[in-house]
Amino acid sequence: MLTGADLLAKVKDLGDASKSDLVRACGYVSHKKDGSERLNFTAFYEALLNAKGVELGGGVRSGKGGRKLSFSTRVQFNGNLMVGKAYTAQLGLQPGDEFEIKLGRKQIQLLPLGAAEEDDE
Image (cartoon, rainbow, N blue to C red; front, side, top):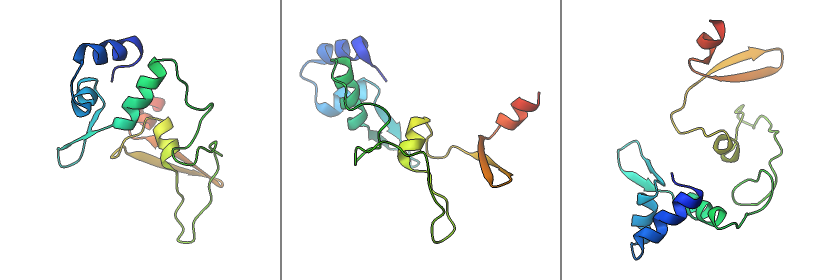
């Protein structure tokens, strides 16, 4: 994904291209499980604004409400413990990423699969 001056230059070079073509050419594309592509317009527009010097909000924010992340959660009524999209996005996690769960005394650690073997070496 292009950012900064590279992004601005590419958009300028493409001139009258459609919005979809701009997003695709600048690398703001992800692929679904079925192989089809998803154009990430929001990420593209945010990167474009940042490249032009427009900063949206300050600090770490969640997506829709604009609130600061609280870095806390609670066990839901059904026993699930949820980590929201804003947190996974901040860590760059993608659907399908796998983790090993390590339990301690009233704590849970999520380690990317393969990280435990690397730490043991």
